[in-house]
Length: 415
Ligand SMILES: Nc1ncnc2c1ncn2[C@@H]1O[C@H](COP(=O)(O)OP(=O)(O)OP(=O)(O)O)[C@@H](O)[C@H]1O
Ligand SMILES: [Mg+2]
Image 1 (cartoon, protein in one colour):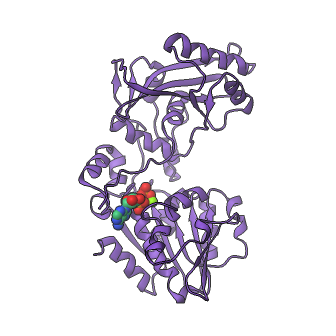
Image 2 (spheres, protein in one colour):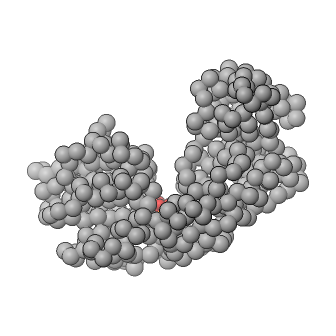
Image 3 (cartoon, helix red, strand yellow):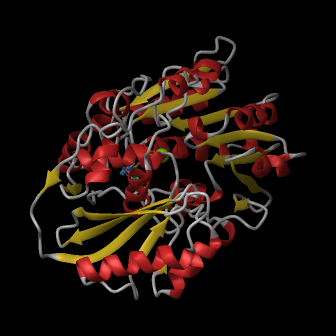
């Protein structure tokens, strides 16, 4: 039995007049799985074998994780296995090439490119692509998308694109979806109906994390502007729980001299509590603070206030933190893992706060102050970009680095 959206994908593949399939909807609504299935039918169709295939993602890692899904259920490898086919060598080689032997005489070649910047697609020169999959296309910079487009036009082409709705002024909506010269279909995916892998509990949980424009975009699939506070819903607590399984820190490094650290405790039930904060302001702002001094203050704070020894504890710093600063932290015994600075983390955090997966202790005054004025930049919305208004957001950043790793896997019940 095919789902509604699966039928749309099949119709698109069969219709020779259509070139672009836009799968748009909320997180986890089944866009990638369903478009990958459609894309696979092109790979298997000899009429597409004259040209190479292409997959573009935000980075090569996201292609590996979201589409090839090596070893994971519902990834391309898994779909191929069901047909008795294999991804040659389980993934792409150092040039980003994936080979899929289809028949004795034909091996499909799929070029995988990260579309994060122009440099990452510069190797595309000379490659001519027929069927292409673009995963999370609004995250591609506009000039990268324009370059990709020039590579796939002409001859028999099929372009499959997945996306979460963005600001109503986003370039992809204006130039590609709404473009009367592009023969495209637009399919809205709703997590409620279009992902047969979600249980009722999953759906309830996903929905409960959304409010305001987040709900309009992610659930209703509307392209609306982000306005007002970025994290409008959060819960403060005064309770001092004693069931923490582990502690970690998020750290924002600002060359201007303000260093913000938050201590995060993870409870047995998985809830993360922002327990405390530490602000370090260089005494003399005309001189950068000594790295050793910053680290020593941090270590003293954790020990004197929390009896937490630096040794073995994880700090997630701003990935742009100066190397000497990171070195000083390591020398004091901290274990360092670069924080994740993807824009997606800002929106994901709103979700985690609304669901109370992350709560804030009321003693975190600096953080609470910052969240109270942490808002979307209306000027950036006019350009179609979701960006925070530039203000003091050191503690907000520290929380994000500490909490947001990557997209957490959805809890999918077996069917
Ligand atoms: N037809 C299906 N049958 C069973 N499980 C499915 C199906 N479609 C999707 N899923 C499950 O739901 C998960 C999310 O689906 P998918 O990655 O396609 O969503 P998405 O809309 O692309 O989400 P995102 O916004 O996170 O990219 C998949 O990893 C898979 O486990
Ligand atoms: Mg996806």
